Image (cartoon, rainbow, N blue to C red; front, side, top):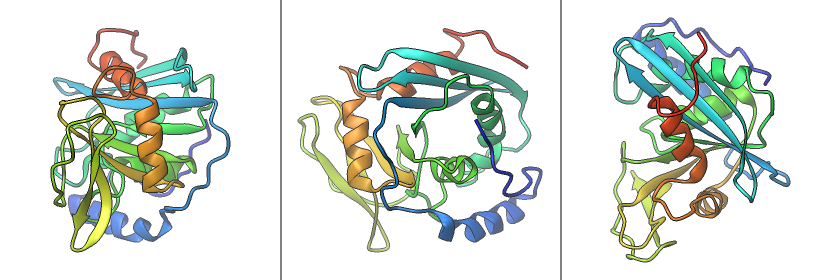
Length: 224
């Protein structure tokens, strides 16, 4: 995959915040997505001081794995809430760059615009890749919402300072919600639809579920 070089990654936390503020106006929340035949899931795990980034590409809508990439890199940025992309994006981009199949949509285990500066890792990756991305996180970073209904497909909007930034979505009956937000080149309603269509009996959508397994070391052999 082609990777745009928008800024360096070796920066201070204050520089990272400034970069996010400079990039946030470039994020598009309009649907700029054609027919989707391939969807990728992205996740990253940590083993000591090593980051393990996994990307799994699946056919869509069948959701059969067709390509995969796993890269290990030393961690180059400490953990700071709100600056996750500066810790995780470099190894993830390295894994994406090695893919043999270019996905048309990418679902990231992390936030899109559901972020204090509207620049979660899904949005950040979307700008670097110039592709539609969706954030599907297991926990909430910011904002408030009402509890959605217990049935699959129920959701409630996630608000921050009066702005809708995502949704708490029930992907399985009586199961904890996931937090869906558009990353880039897609709107919230379409993001919700794709996440639901990628869930096959589990809380997490199949692309990020398989990527999580790979990043956790249960499948795939890492490349350095």
